[in-house]
Amino acid sequence: MLTYINSTNTSTLLFLISVLGIFLNQKNILVMLMSLEMMFLAVSFNLIFASIHLDDITGQVFSLLILTVAAAESSIGLAILVIYYRIRSVITVELMNLMKG
Image 1 (cartoon, rainbow, N blue to C red):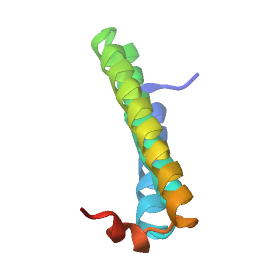
Image 2: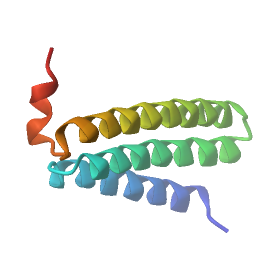
Image 3: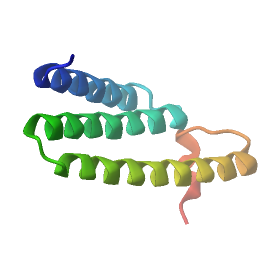
Image 4: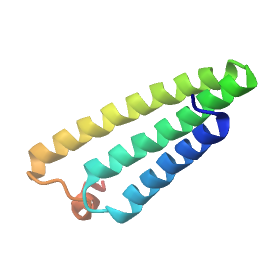
């Protein structure tokens, strides 16, 4: 069974991997979105284990709120990417400045 320290280390490792995924791969927007989702999941994971360790339900409620916001953000982001791909036929971060209004 995971102890609180092991779960904190695991969530910190997931968070740092996702930060590296964002900073090291700045060309592919899909990998950046997946890394952002992994960040949200790492924070949610940490809140859930802190909630279990402290025997309080507040962390689990915040975790549900984070997951709903992350799901809405990813669905809107993917919808924008699909429309952008249909117009430009390519998805690159360098060409995203063409979307400025």
